Length: 193
Image (cartoon, rainbow, N blue to C red; front, side):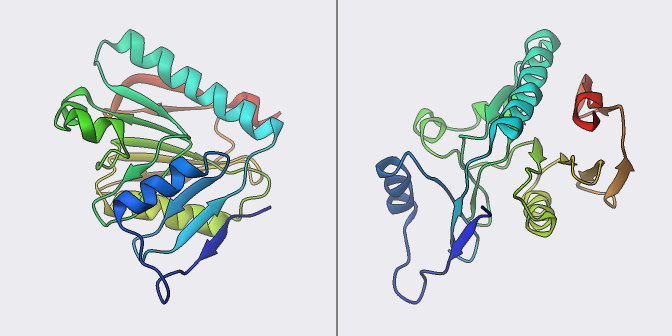
């Protein structure tokens, strides 16, 4: 099942607090919201996709703990309030300690009003690639420094950075976080098997 997008604007325009409450009231569903106010209902991932996502997050957490940079790692359950007004949930995200500490305690506990410094989007079997590419561009437009769109179906990784053109790498065995995530190397060979 692919995501369902509902344009409620002709009838209802949800405030940030109403959107937050909607998400709390329906925890069994995963919602996102576009900058135009469209409500996106995300489908759950299957076993293979969930396992792959967990592997990616585990590697990011392990690196973060050992890097001593003090940043924060987030799972796909975290919804970020981006500067353009959209509410998005990447499959994995990381924010520098400095950027995280700029938020108030209340902001940290709700949908943090910040664009992550780094995100991973992992294409699941039911995802169309174009919406994920648009979502990655949305992150870039909102201040993302580095993003990886991992596409197991086409055996590719799209690397997106703020000031450079998107790079597409075919079947990489590993990718690294360059100067954004110094020392982080993600082994991808398990995805291509």
